[in-house]
Amino acid sequence: MLALLQGLTEFLPISSSAHLVLMPRLVGWEDQGLAFDVAVHVGTLLAVVTYFRHELAKMLVDWLQSLTGGKPTPEARLAWQVLLATLPVAVTGLLLHDIIETYLRSPLVIAVTTVVFGLLLWWSDRHDRQRRDESSLRISDVLVIGFAQVLALVPGTSRSGVTMTAGLALGLTRTAAARFSFLLSVPVILMAGAYETLKLVQQPGPVAWDLLLLGTAVAAISAWLCIHYFLQLIERIGMLPFVIYRLLLGAFLFWIFL
Image 1 (cartoon, rainbow, N blue to C red):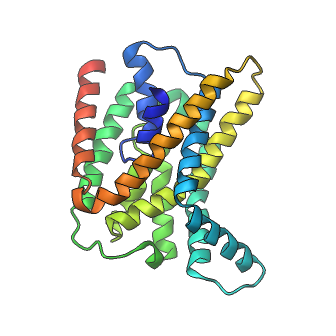
Image 2 (tube, rainbow, N blue to C red):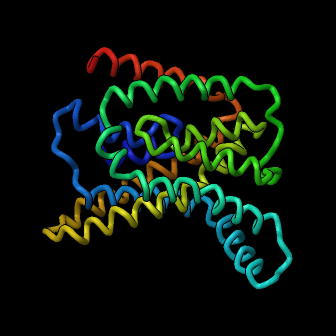
Protein backbone atom coordinates (compact mmCIF):
# COMPACT_ATOMS: atom_id res chain seq x y z
CA MET A 1 0.00 0.00 0.00
CA LEU A 2 2.78 2.46 0.87
CA ALA A 3 4.72 1.69 -2.31
CA LEU A 4 1.57 2.17 -4.38
CA LEU A 5 0.86 5.41 -2.53
CA GLN A 6 4.41 6.66 -3.21
CA GLY A 7 4.21 5.76 -6.90
CA LEU A 8 0.85 7.42 -7.45
CA THR A 9 1.53 10.60 -5.47
CA GLU A 10 5.18 11.34 -6.31
CA PHE A 11 4.30 12.94 -9.64
CA LEU A 12 0.76 14.17 -8.98
CA PRO A 13 0.40 17.68 -7.47
CA ILE A 14 -0.90 16.32 -4.15
CA SER A 15 2.32 15.68 -2.12
CA SER A 16 3.73 12.18 -1.70
CA SER A 17 5.56 13.10 1.51
CA ALA A 18 2.30 14.23 3.13
CA HIS A 19 0.58 10.96 2.27
CA LEU A 20 3.50 8.84 3.51
CA VAL A 21 3.59 10.80 6.79
CA LEU A 22 -0.17 10.64 7.30
CA MET A 23 -1.04 7.09 6.24
CA PRO A 24 0.81 5.27 9.07
CA ARG A 25 -0.60 7.75 11.62
CA LEU A 26 -4.16 7.40 10.42
CA VAL A 27 -4.18 3.58 10.35
CA GLY A 28 -1.76 2.93 13.22
CA TRP A 29 1.02 1.27 11.20
CA GLU A 30 4.59 1.14 12.41
CA ASP A 31 7.18 3.32 10.70
CA GLN A 32 8.18 1.72 7.42
CA GLY A 33 11.90 2.31 8.00
CA LEU A 34 14.74 3.80 5.99
CA ALA A 35 15.29 0.75 3.81
CA PHE A 36 11.74 0.95 2.52
CA ASP A 37 12.06 4.70 1.86
CA VAL A 38 15.15 4.00 -0.24
CA ALA A 39 13.35 1.22 -2.13
CA VAL A 40 10.35 3.33 -3.14
CA HIS A 41 12.60 6.24 -4.14
CA VAL A 42 14.51 3.86 -6.41
CA GLY A 43 11.18 2.73 -7.84
CA THR A 44 9.97 6.23 -8.70
CA LEU A 45 13.40 7.12 -10.11
CA LEU A 46 13.30 4.06 -12.37
CA ALA A 47 9.84 5.13 -13.55
CA VAL A 48 10.74 8.68 -14.56
CA VAL A 49 14.09 7.69 -16.10
CA THR A 50 12.43 4.91 -18.10
CA TYR A 51 9.60 7.15 -19.28
CA PHE A 52 11.90 9.99 -20.39
CA ARG A 53 14.83 7.75 -21.37
CA HIS A 54 15.19 9.16 -24.89
CA GLU A 55 15.02 12.81 -23.77
CA LEU A 56 17.36 12.20 -20.84
CA ALA A 57 19.90 10.36 -22.99
CA LYS A 58 19.93 13.19 -25.53
CA MET A 59 20.18 15.80 -22.75
CA LEU A 60 23.11 13.97 -21.16
CA VAL A 61 25.04 13.55 -24.42
CA ASP A 62 24.51 17.15 -25.51
CA TRP A 63 25.30 18.46 -22.01
CA LEU A 64 28.61 16.57 -21.96
CA GLN A 65 29.43 17.94 -25.41
CA SER A 66 28.67 21.47 -24.22
CA LEU A 67 31.29 21.01 -21.49
CA THR A 68 33.94 20.38 -24.13
CA GLY A 69 33.04 23.37 -26.30
CA GLY A 70 30.33 21.78 -28.40
CA LYS A 71 27.55 23.86 -29.89
CA PRO A 72 24.76 24.36 -27.31
CA THR A 73 21.62 22.51 -28.41
CA PRO A 74 18.09 22.87 -26.97
CA GLU A 75 18.64 19.60 -25.09
CA ALA A 76 21.94 20.84 -23.61
CA ARG A 77 20.26 24.08 -22.51
CA LEU A 78 17.44 22.07 -20.94
CA ALA A 79 19.97 19.96 -19.03
CA TRP A 80 21.67 23.10 -17.72
CA GLN A 81 18.28 24.51 -16.73
CA VAL A 82 17.39 21.36 -14.78
CA LEU A 83 20.71 21.55 -12.92
CA LEU A 84 20.26 25.28 -12.21
CA ALA A 85 16.73 24.78 -10.91
CA THR A 86 17.97 21.99 -8.62
CA LEU A 87 20.65 24.07 -6.87
CA PRO A 88 18.32 26.01 -4.51
CA VAL A 89 16.62 22.90 -3.12
CA ALA A 90 19.93 21.03 -2.85
CA VAL A 91 21.54 23.77 -0.76
CA THR A 92 18.46 24.46 1.35
CA GLY A 93 17.82 20.77 1.93
CA LEU A 94 21.34 20.23 3.25
CA LEU A 95 21.16 23.27 5.54
CA LEU A 96 17.63 22.88 6.90
CA HIS A 97 16.84 19.16 6.63
CA ASP A 98 16.99 18.46 10.38
CA ILE A 99 14.86 21.49 11.23
CA ILE A 100 12.21 20.50 8.68
CA GLU A 101 12.18 16.87 9.86
CA THR A 102 11.85 17.96 13.50
CA TYR A 103 9.34 20.80 13.36
CA LEU A 104 7.42 20.71 10.08
CA ARG A 105 6.08 17.16 9.78
CA SER A 106 2.98 17.63 11.95
CA PRO A 107 -0.50 16.89 10.52
CA LEU A 108 -1.58 20.52 11.03
CA VAL A 109 1.37 21.85 9.03
CA ILE A 110 0.47 19.38 6.28
CA ALA A 111 -3.17 20.50 6.44
CA VAL A 112 -2.23 24.17 6.01
CA THR A 113 0.22 23.59 3.15
CA THR A 114 -2.19 21.22 1.42
CA VAL A 115 -4.91 23.89 1.33
CA VAL A 116 -2.73 26.96 0.66
CA PHE A 117 -0.72 25.45 -2.17
CA GLY A 118 -3.83 23.81 -3.58
CA LEU A 119 -5.40 27.27 -3.92
CA LEU A 120 -2.22 28.61 -5.53
CA LEU A 121 -2.32 25.74 -8.02
CA TRP A 122 -5.94 26.62 -8.85
CA TRP A 123 -5.04 30.30 -9.29
CA SER A 124 -2.11 29.60 -11.63
CA ASP A 125 -4.12 27.09 -13.67
CA ARG A 126 -6.82 29.70 -14.39
CA HIS A 127 -4.37 31.88 -16.35
CA ASP A 128 -5.34 32.17 -20.00
CA ARG A 129 -1.79 32.93 -21.21
CA GLN A 130 -0.41 29.39 -21.07
CA ARG A 131 1.18 29.23 -24.50
CA ARG A 132 4.87 28.48 -23.85
CA ASP A 133 6.71 25.16 -23.86
CA GLU A 134 9.77 24.19 -21.82
CA SER A 135 12.18 25.19 -24.62
CA SER A 136 11.16 28.84 -24.11
CA LEU A 137 12.33 28.98 -20.49
CA ARG A 138 14.71 31.81 -19.59
CA ILE A 139 17.21 31.81 -16.74
CA SER A 140 14.88 33.98 -14.68
CA ASP A 141 12.04 31.49 -15.24
CA VAL A 142 14.24 28.57 -14.22
CA LEU A 143 15.27 30.35 -11.02
CA VAL A 144 11.64 31.08 -10.13
CA ILE A 145 10.76 27.39 -10.55
CA GLY A 146 13.90 26.35 -8.69
CA PHE A 147 13.19 28.55 -5.67
CA ALA A 148 9.54 27.44 -5.72
CA GLN A 149 10.81 23.87 -5.46
CA VAL A 150 12.47 24.77 -2.15
CA LEU A 151 9.01 25.19 -0.63
CA ALA A 152 8.35 21.50 -1.31
CA LEU A 153 10.75 20.60 1.50
CA VAL A 154 7.77 21.30 3.77
CA PRO A 155 5.45 18.23 3.73
CA GLY A 156 2.10 18.88 2.11
CA THR A 157 3.41 21.42 -0.39
CA SER A 158 4.11 18.86 -3.17
CA ARG A 159 7.29 19.17 -5.23
CA SER A 160 5.48 18.46 -8.48
CA GLY A 161 2.58 20.67 -7.46
CA VAL A 162 4.63 23.75 -6.57
CA THR A 163 6.89 23.48 -9.64
CA MET A 164 3.85 23.09 -11.90
CA THR A 165 2.23 26.05 -10.17
CA ALA A 166 5.30 28.18 -10.88
CA GLY A 167 5.49 26.95 -14.47
CA LEU A 168 1.83 27.70 -15.13
CA ALA A 169 2.16 31.16 -13.57
CA LEU A 170 5.08 31.83 -15.96
CA GLY A 171 2.90 30.99 -18.95
CA LEU A 172 3.87 27.37 -19.63
CA THR A 173 1.20 25.05 -20.94
CA ARG A 174 0.01 22.38 -18.53
CA THR A 175 1.93 19.69 -20.41
CA ALA A 176 5.14 21.76 -20.53
CA ALA A 177 4.90 22.60 -16.82
CA ALA A 178 4.37 18.93 -16.01
CA ARG A 179 7.21 17.72 -18.25
CA PHE A 180 9.71 20.18 -16.78
CA SER A 181 8.56 19.24 -13.27
CA PHE A 182 9.08 15.55 -14.03
CA LEU A 183 12.56 16.19 -15.47
CA LEU A 184 13.39 18.19 -12.33
CA SER A 185 12.44 15.17 -10.24
CA VAL A 186 15.41 13.11 -11.50
CA PRO A 187 18.20 14.94 -9.60
CA VAL A 188 15.92 15.59 -6.62
CA ILE A 189 14.96 11.92 -6.21
CA LEU A 190 18.60 10.96 -6.73
CA MET A 191 19.68 13.28 -3.92
CA ALA A 192 16.90 12.12 -1.59
CA GLY A 193 17.66 8.47 -2.30
CA ALA A 194 21.39 8.99 -1.79
CA TYR A 195 20.80 10.78 1.52
CA GLU A 196 18.52 8.01 2.81
CA THR A 197 20.95 5.34 1.59
CA LEU A 198 23.78 7.02 3.52
CA LYS A 199 21.69 6.99 6.68
CA LEU A 200 20.75 3.37 6.05
CA VAL A 201 24.39 2.32 5.69
CA GLN A 202 25.11 3.92 9.06
CA GLN A 203 22.36 1.83 10.67
CA PRO A 204 23.27 -1.79 9.86
CA GLY A 205 20.70 -4.46 10.45
CA PRO A 206 18.78 -7.27 8.76
CA VAL A 207 17.31 -6.39 5.37
CA ALA A 208 14.08 -7.93 4.04
CA TRP A 209 15.14 -7.96 0.40
CA ASP A 210 11.95 -9.60 -0.85
CA LEU A 211 9.78 -6.82 0.59
CA LEU A 212 12.15 -4.11 -0.64
CA LEU A 213 12.14 -5.50 -4.19
CA LEU A 214 8.35 -5.73 -4.10
CA GLY A 215 8.13 -2.13 -2.89
CA THR A 216 10.51 -0.97 -5.62
CA ALA A 217 8.52 -2.78 -8.33
CA VAL A 218 5.12 -1.53 -7.14
CA ALA A 219 6.37 2.06 -6.84
CA ALA A 220 8.03 1.92 -10.28
CA ILE A 221 5.01 0.51 -12.12
CA SER A 222 2.46 2.78 -10.45
CA ALA A 223 4.66 5.86 -10.95
CA TRP A 224 5.21 5.07 -14.66
CA LEU A 225 1.48 4.68 -15.21
CA CYS A 226 0.83 7.88 -13.27
CA ILE A 227 3.27 9.89 -15.44
CA HIS A 228 1.87 8.41 -18.66
CA TYR A 229 -1.81 9.07 -17.97
CA PHE A 230 -1.21 12.43 -16.29
CA LEU A 231 0.52 13.75 -19.42
CA GLN A 232 -2.21 12.22 -21.60
CA LEU A 233 -5.06 13.84 -19.68
CA ILE A 234 -3.78 17.05 -18.13
CA GLU A 235 -4.64 19.40 -20.99
CA ARG A 236 -8.23 18.13 -20.96
CA ILE A 237 -8.96 17.85 -17.24
CA GLY A 238 -6.76 20.67 -15.94
CA MET A 239 -5.67 20.96 -12.31
CA LEU A 240 -9.12 21.41 -10.76
CA PRO A 241 -9.58 17.73 -9.73
CA PHE A 242 -6.30 17.84 -7.81
CA VAL A 243 -7.20 21.20 -6.24
CA ILE A 244 -10.53 19.79 -5.04
CA TYR A 245 -8.76 16.72 -3.65
CA ARG A 246 -6.26 18.89 -1.78
CA LEU A 247 -9.00 21.05 -0.27
CA LEU A 248 -10.97 17.99 0.86
CA LEU A 249 -7.82 16.39 2.30
CA GLY A 250 -6.92 19.60 4.14
CA ALA A 251 -10.43 19.91 5.57
CA PHE A 252 -10.31 16.28 6.71
CA LEU A 253 -6.96 16.80 8.44
CA PHE A 254 -8.22 19.91 10.23
CA TRP A 255 -11.27 17.95 11.38
CA ILE A 256 -9.18 15.02 12.65
CA PHE A 257 -6.21 16.78 14.23
CA LEU A 258 -7.36 20.29 15.21
